[in-house]
Length: 531
Image 1 (cartoon, rainbow, N blue to C red):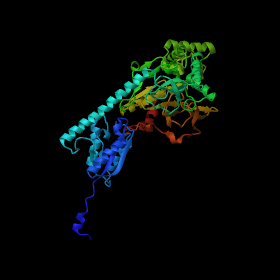
Image 2: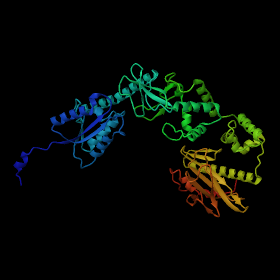
Image 3: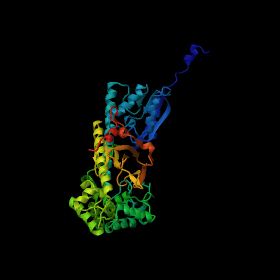
Image 4: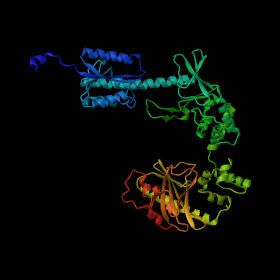
């Protein structure tokens, strides 16, 4: 065993530290190599041994969310078996350019609370907790945040200037267009493929029509929509039948076609700053009068007159028809076919949609009464439908009142029999009497809507000649095929037992934000007599 004198002759082990490096695009002086050299000199001067390395390369210091190295560092300092007692950082701005100076202070305090000191090796003050150090750090943090704000403003102004000069700034150019690299003399250098960018500072990027056939397809889309009775969905279906895929290599959808038909870049107009996200904040839509719009920035793909014709047709489609226009459209259908129904309204583009009729009059039957049309329907079935609708509205009003008592915001859409709870949960309330097989075997069928989105279909059953509710099926999205009729109950048993409920208590529980203690079962509501 060595003597005390022998033990004291050994030098004390140097303190251990971790180093944190963050490199963004601020300045070359903040390169990782430069920071490492400065930290190494400080460690050598103060006899500190660096045992851990944390580096966020090419990452902004605005938030903690996208800085995995700093997150790992904060987790490690809380670990009692860590092997370092301090963290060496080049300066305050490398710790972060947080817009809230208290956020930067909080993360430093997290380290200090765990017994780990944060040392800024390039700052002219010691981070010793003194009043002077606290004041200087607060100033440095505020200056770091202000630098980010000023840099963001300069970058935005630079993008705006490039847009006004006719250059492309950022983002995908869209189907039928390509990016072209040009030099300082506006001479074409080469087309840029996806994920290719300019490497010379004086070079710029412009947008040109595609030469592989996509531009011709875009022109055909505009021609079809302007000159033929076809919708955007119909154009997408036509393209898919031809085996033509969109820019992502996927089948076309109506919304893809609609985005093209509405976009001014296909007549050579560059529109910039429609949305904005400052300093990693949420994306917000910019008012149209603040957009930067440069006409003639690109070579056009379609003629301006053709584009204008498409925009007029789109505007006409968005306009809600008046009551007189709806009545006139329905009468035109009757004059052509001698009858009218939901299928015929969908067939003729000049006719109002069934949804527009229902919104204006409450139901198709009410609209028929206004125009003096007597539909050729089974009188018994018509009476059944009236009973079903009255019960649907009765259930909807009662459930709405209960949910509102629980503090929910509830909106009932009468024309679709849909409840919207808290702007998030949508459910359609349907009550049906049965159809009959051979006049005496009842069965109940349901149809999931295909023209609007819901989360649940609440299906209530009634007897053929009864006025009371028997039970409910609460069917979630995916349980039924949209637009198809499905048997729900037949031969005395449910085909969807997992979704069968004797009352609507489960429906109220779907809101999942309040206690259901003391609520009466909604089946009692269904057991009441019809009002």
